[in-house]
Image 1 (cartoon, one colour):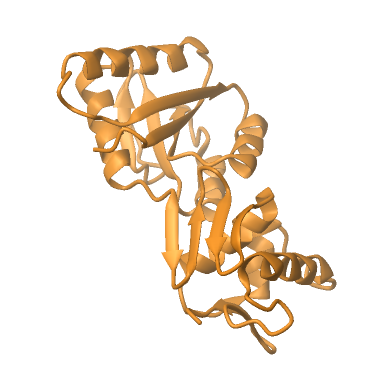
Image 2 (cartoon, helix red, strand yellow):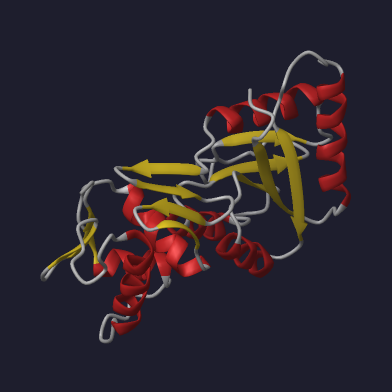
Length: 231
């Protein structure tokens, strides 16, 4: 494993000490294997769904660890919304007892109190599936730093431009409709005025195109949407 890799967890729950508990367990596991080079771990805690959504909009996380219980449909709608908005995010349930009903298809499940082996398995799994860097042709996007590298050099991207490029990169050479972009990046189905999208496309072209006025990578497909080309 590379020492430069950092796994970022976001915890949504009632116990702020969980973040320190995760990090403490991971430090002990790393100390027990001094000859290995496991990834670093950074854990952030929030106590509301609103705070979680705001953090996910601004920063890249490998997984959201969500405290849940056996109350009817507890956080189910929120999980469904997360899956729609952040399809690459792994959603992990954290519960003191087994869930009686499978209301949502969690990617992983943890039990309280935290067990070292369970934490170790989760971090290693996230490391194996780490997708902080995406490449397509001459375009390279680092989600952790929101940096794009391409024909016009390296540029730091604002959150919306990064989300737009991430969506296009995730679809490779396929067309992504305006409706899909507006729903995923701007979280709206309002399509009467999509000038904001066009402005962001122009700004993105200024960072990744050899000649922004004659794009060869970020292409407009008339009447359909946009797609990336290797160029």
